Length: 158
Image (cartoon, rainbow, N blue to C red; front, side, top):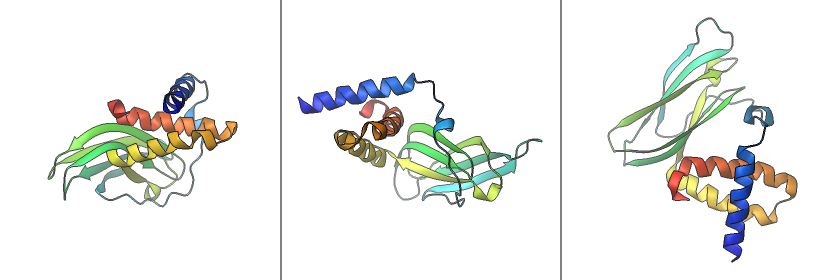
């Protein structure tokens, strides 16, 4: 019964966040990213976007070198911007997949990326849902944004 109540509360809060009028870029600022990329990722294209100041074309490549990869999402980061891409894809060993965006950055060297594997996203989602009863009302709003992100990239797994 308690699990159903927590699931219902999480679903209602996620739906309310989806329909809120606050843009995610207004809610959170990201500064000082060092331009690193996580394991299995490689920078492919980093070049200025045609005649726009502080705008870059950024593409990364994810390759499954050791084993198959279940990719839930890719987070592209810079010193002033962050793009979360829901991927929900399986990459077979020996194959690669490309992800990219046009990003805002003061310097192209600050562009980096993080690969979110499916099992990591599921663990993070479950941890966030379990932590809701312990949080204050103010903290629940930011937690629900994270929960809705992980829920969307996990697709039918939750």
